[in-house]
Length: 497
Ligand code: FAD
Ligand code: SF4
Ligand code: SF4
Picture 1 (cartoon, rainbow, N blue to C red):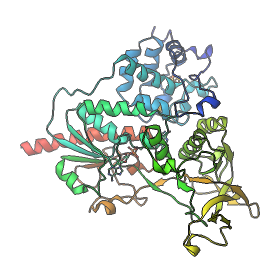
Picture 2 (picture 1 turned 135 degrees about the vertical axis):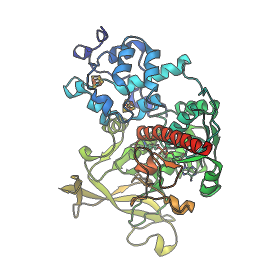
Picture 3 (picture 1 turned 180 degrees about the horizontal axis):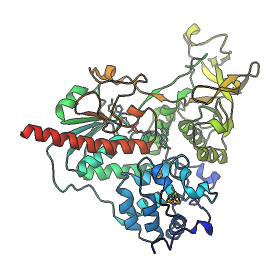
Picture 4 (picture 1 turned 135 degrees about the horizontal axis):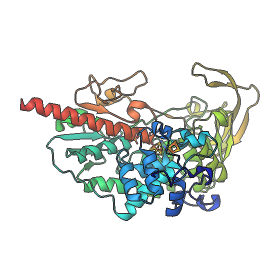
């Protein structure tokens, strides 16, 4: 019977792959989890109870056939497990590494709900696809038939790459444009190597190149080439540009030297990890070595910043967040990893001002700031305001309220702002009439077809959803590819009639 090897959750406990100890992993940017050995992957997969109604699957944005590939893994049929898993996911090994599984598949596993500890779905998904790479089962895309229609994809993040892969498999001619010098989007320049090693992303890009996808890098649409020119070159266009406008603080000395944006900081660190020479890192501006570091924010970007600062050799790293641990947006698993590595979380705290000094002469923010003197002060401390949680707002979330008179100064030589991202105003930046946006500035696109208000123009990922997750960008990209194929087939039919 197919389930003989399964349902072992009663006798076998949940185990994650071994985690490197905090001291050694804090010294480098390698991933912190080791791979499951084959026997361990089989054992952990066998804990699945093969639910008739698998909640894991319905809470995976890609609706992965999780019970199927868990059973195949438990039976030692890893290649079949891989084939099943890649039917629904373009980059399973990436999702296995960085999906917040506790909020998605694993958080909804029924054996977790019954107190036995979730099946380690993400780690097994990673194991299956890493094995597929090692065994040579993953090969460049080879369409059975070429099609003449071409699609221009703007943005080489997970949304754009997932669409590129699917369209190329159907035989379309695909060109991906990106303003960066490498493909991958936030997978390469946002998310640090200790969560997702760069080579894992680069081999996927290489696979697409070898499969015939054309990459045009170092080209910023709207600056180096117009959107209309891209539209004129291709039969359909996909916008997958992500969200990059950073939210800011309106407090004294907000622009002091030593106060930096999270993405500038992470991009520099990722580039150094990739072997690039980065002057702002070398001269210390975007380098935490020896400094007292304060990171402001409680999301995944803040978690990545604190843990990067530890690896760069910061003297101390503190994370200020205005709500408490239970109400933070970042993953609890990442908070635990950060604490193990030496990060201190200062809950219910917000920055009230930055204190700076000019040319060695100490002065507090209120006495003199950037606008008064024309000189830019250098950060020396963060004025920390203490908060408490008040009444719930319309969303049901408790709002932080200031506790008067509880402020104090936290010394700092580097402050990293990780306050979230918003969309840039693309229609204005690109001079495109008729491309509709929502009141939040994200591009308006049909949620199933991903078509925008312009015929033949589609949009996916963060630029539509606002800052979201890699797995949602992949889903959007795959769905948009199917819609584009339908649109082009219809267009071809009309042209032939
Ligand atoms: P992006 O990945 O942002 O890619 C957009 C691409 O478009 C970029 O390469 C950019 O250079 C390019 N581009 C933009 N404008 C132009 C232009 N005008 N011309 C040419 N190219 C352009 N999600 C998770 O699921 N798990 C995590 O652990 C996680 N950690 C994160 C950590 C950080 C620090 C950040 C910032 C985000 C994290 N996310 C995480 C979110 C995730 O990275 C995004 O949701 C996802 O990358 C969105 O994919 P995308 O394809 O829409 O956009
Ligand atoms: Fe879970 Fe993400 Fe994999 Fe879906 S893609 S099964 S949510 S790890
Ligand atoms: Fe297996 Fe858990 Fe999914 Fe049920 S919910 S099929 S036990 S992984």
